[in-house]
Length: 314
Image 1 (tube, rainbow, N blue to C red):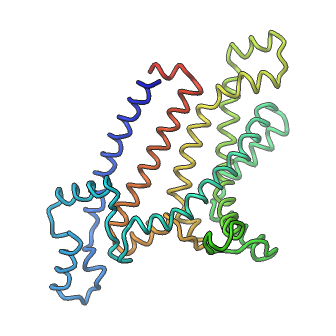
Image 2: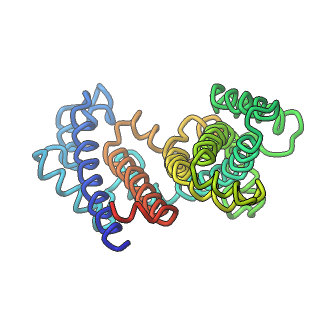
Image 3: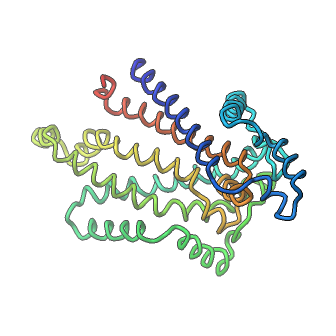
């Protein structure tokens, strides 16, 4: 298990290095001068040159890359040109919104999808199975922002149970803050639950056709015992894959939902930084999100090895 983990750690480090190079290079080739865009088209050349020097844009490309990477490794994400505050402070302020939102959505998605997928697999070919698969197909096809608008209309406008948008902060009270995140979490969770339910059903059906499952049935084990004791654990690998990808998506890919609900999260921060050409914010936050995705996938790999010991020898 130790050698398996060490190999995966090496892959993680190589992936992070490659991702940092790609992110830095892509943003460098994007047309437009950040200093000129920030000061406006009527700014003088002297003012633009002074700002470029302040931002470090007058330095050669490779030294700037290593300066940026060195700062990231020491916890210094640089200073935002737009907000005039350290980027780490911006990330910290937005993470207290995006992380709970992602965790709530992941919990709701898993709590819905796993029972639904198991229920559908246990009743393969029945009317209940057909109905569940039709519902999940609908959940995949409909965009989550449409779910968001529908939830706002029903629960915020018509019923007035929860706020329609905004985030009051955790200082306003736990329930007040969670209620502001509830509709966004549901809007994010429903499409993801539909995907996860279909994957769970397919994985279980694949496992249920294996020889050892037929042997267990031939020994007289009840159907529920075969499903829960033998089939479910062996069907977890593709489910864990989707869970890892979903958490990464929910943390990094919530730009639309955060804008629909006016949530000050990481997704909205990246969007605003891109429009304002605040390169240091975009570079640092994108690499941080990439690192989160890579680390989550690393943890998923470890979960693979736990679920299937045969993988430890690869």
